[in-house]
Image (tube, rainbow, N blue to C red; front, top):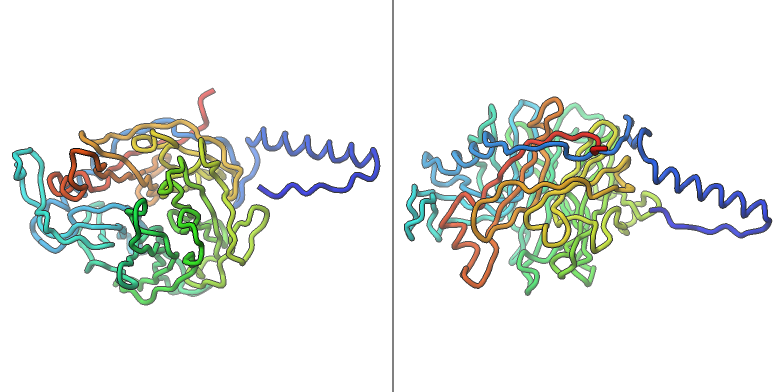
Amino acid sequence: MPDDRRARQRTGAGVGLLLTLALAAVLLTALPRDHHGEGGGTCTARTVREWSPDARLTDSFAAYGDDETRTDDWTGGDGTHSVRLPDGRVLWLFSDTYLGRVYAPPNPVGESYAWRDTAAPLVRNSAVVMRDGHPHLTLPAPLFPDPGPNAWRWPVAARVEPRSPGSAESVVRVLLWTRTAGPYPWIYGVPAATEVATLSLPDLRVESIVKVFGQELVQDPSQRVQFGTTSAVVGDWTYVFGGNDAQAAARPTSSAYVARVPVGLLAEPDAWEFWDGSAWTARAGPRPVLGDGQHTGVGSAFSVVRDGGTYVLFTMAAGSRGLTTVTSYWACSPVGPWHGPTRSFGPPLPPGQVAAYNPQAHPELGGGDRLVLSYDVNWLLDATATSAALNLSRNVSLYRPRFVTLRLGPPPR
C-alpha cells in the first residue's frame, strides 16, 4: 500500500479536508465492487463457487508416465507449469523430474502400486510436449543445464511473446529459479536468482539464459525474492509475481511480490520494474503486495489469473491447512489490495503421509467459465520414512500432477 504521508495542518479547513479525503479512502477500500480493475473490465469479488476432480487430465499424465515405449522419458515431476504454443501444442515445464522405467504392480514390498527403481535418473528440470490433450514427448532432460556445482534451475511461468516489441517472430520465454545447496532448513535449496530462458519456435531449442534479478547479496535467505511463480499479460505489460521462502524459516506464510515488464522484453533485465509499495521503480527494492506473516499470505508457489476485470490468486492456505487446502484471494489490481482468503477447498489426496502444494492455473486448458488448476503431491518425511525418494519410488503416482476443474463467481450472500 502507498506510504501514508501526512500534510502539515495549517488551518481548521485543512484538517477538515484531510478528514474528508481519509473517509473517502476508507469507503473506497471497504466497497471495492463494481469498479474497473487495472487493464479494463469490471472488477467484482470472486471466489471458488464449485470444483471437481479432473480425472481425464490426471489420468493422461499417469498413463504417459507408466508407458514403457521409451525408458528415457518423464515418469514423474513437480512444478507443473504450462504454456500453449502458437501451433496448438502445450508445453509443460517441471522442476525435479524422474526419468527411466516404471514397473507394474506389485512393488517390491508387495503393495499394489506401480513403482520405479530407486536408481532411476533424477534431473532438476524437464519439459513435456502435449498434443491433442495428451502428453506425447519428453524433450532431452534436463532442458536447462545447471548454472554451476551444487546449483540448479527450476522452470516456473512461461509466456509466448514477440522476440522484441513489435516483432512478427514469436519465442517462448521461461522464468527460471536458480537455487544452491544449503544446510537445514534449506532442504530444497537456497534461493539465488531469477533468470529468463528464450526458446525458439517451433523446435523449442534453448537459445539463451539471462539473469534478470539477483538475490545473492541478500544475507537472510528467507527474505530473498524469486519472480515467476505466475504471470499475467494485461495490455502492453507482463505482470510477473514472485515470493520469498519465509516458510523455510518456520514463518507461517510467505509474502507475494510483483514486477512488470513491457511485452517482448522479459529477457531484458533493464526493462523490469518492481512495485516498491507506492510506485513502480526500476531499482531492485520490491515490497510485498500480500502477506502479514501470520494469517494471510502465500505458499512459496502460487498462481494468478484474470476473471473479467478481477485478479484471482490461488495458493495453499496459511497454517497447518497449508498441507491439504487450497484457498484464494482477489484484487482489482496486481498490486492489491488483495481481499481474502475466500472459500477454501481440499483437493483429493492419496493415502499416507502426503502433502499438496504448488496450485497452478492453466487457462489454456479451460473453456467458458471452466478453469483448470493443477496441484503437486509429495511424501512428508517422518519417523517411519527413511526418505521421501524411497516412498516416491514405491508409489509413482505420488509425484505426478493432479488436476481439478473450478468455476469462479461472486461470494455467496
